[in-house]
Amino acid sequence: MTWYLLLLFFCAFLGGIAVFLFKGGNHKQLKLVLSFSGAYLFGITVLHLIPDAYHGQDHLVGVFILGGFLFQIVLEQFSEGIEHGHMHVHEHDKAVFPLGIMVSLCLHGFLEGMPLASGYQSQLVFGIALHHIPAAFALGTVLLANHQSKGKTIFFIALFAVMAPAGYFFSNALSSGGIGNLQQYFNRIMGVVIGIFLHISTTILFEAGPDHKFNRRKLIAVLLGVGIALAGFVSEL
Image 1 (cartoon, rainbow, N blue to C red):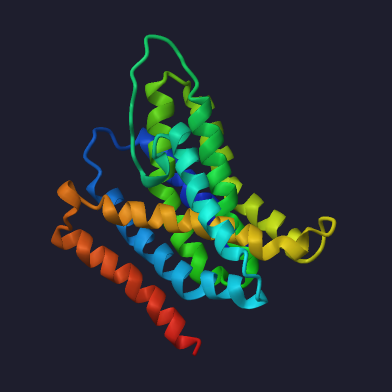
Image 2 (image 1 turned 45 degrees about the horizontal axis):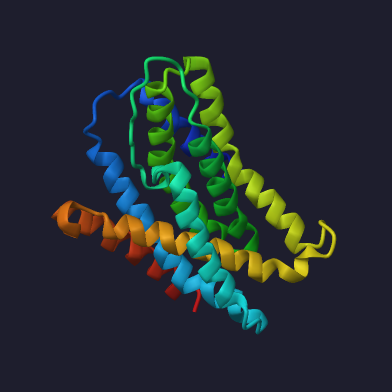
């Protein structure tokens, strides 16, 4: 699991640091990575996470899935869709720290790391890691546009990068009973995370291109993401 956590951290961290190397607004390769990871996360959520959440016969799980979906909508009022790789840059004459974006993105990253404790590390970690590359790049772009120093930008990118591993450790302690008696609510908490995954992945897919149309490269990326998720599922039958 250590290698998985390092992969999560460094994909997000290096994805954010890349903002110092790549200039300009044309990031077609990042958009392809985003499309692939969105399709892959959607496949993993439908094939693994949802059935597992209902395994405990808790019929209220669906309510928490719906709650997670709505919660992500609320988060995006502060993050401005940066989880999807969106870079809504607002120019300022002086340094302005985007607190709402930072807090909501860190909470998003923390929650995304939680399912890794449920037994699907190998399937999920790559999708989350790839998804965090464009998100971290967008975060770095916004921080620089708000005149944050290079040192502060690197620090806040690292803070975001550590959120998913932190979510794993919290979820692992929760599921094993290490945090009070909260383990009995683990499936409901996972329901919230599933709702967030559903919102993030479907939004990425629906926003794949102008007028919601897929070009050939993005269509291949999406089909590849879903195909790999399906192949992993079939291999376990």
